[in-house]
Image (cartoon, rainbow, N blue to C red; front, side, top):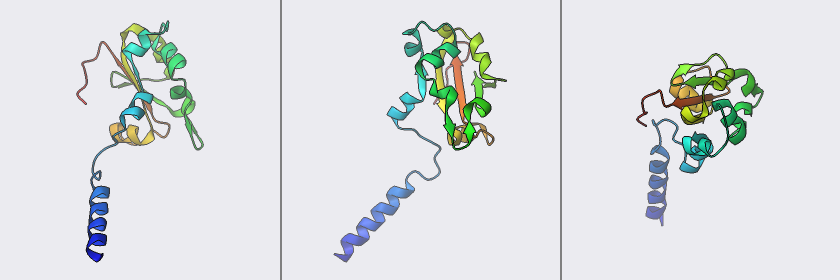
Length: 133
């Protein structure tokens, strides 16, 4: 009985350590919830990237956590360049968007460094080279 308990303890410790040192890795279902694809956007009559987000994932723009409101602190990156505001999404034609992804605060910090308490919205257009994830 003691050997079985010891084996279970070792297996538990190894399982807990397996993810140490790796960045955030969302589950596939979570990734779909946090991502808008070009195909989803094409299925709407959205004219701009902003329209697409508003219609398909409005929570991206209005996400709140604790006392931090996304409207005040959400960082926007368009082809890896920091945008000054979400209004810049209105200048991007919907058909040029490859992907729009919401990163929560921890994912944004892992990718871009500290200072993103409301997370980040990452827009990839046809003008940017494909990413290697």
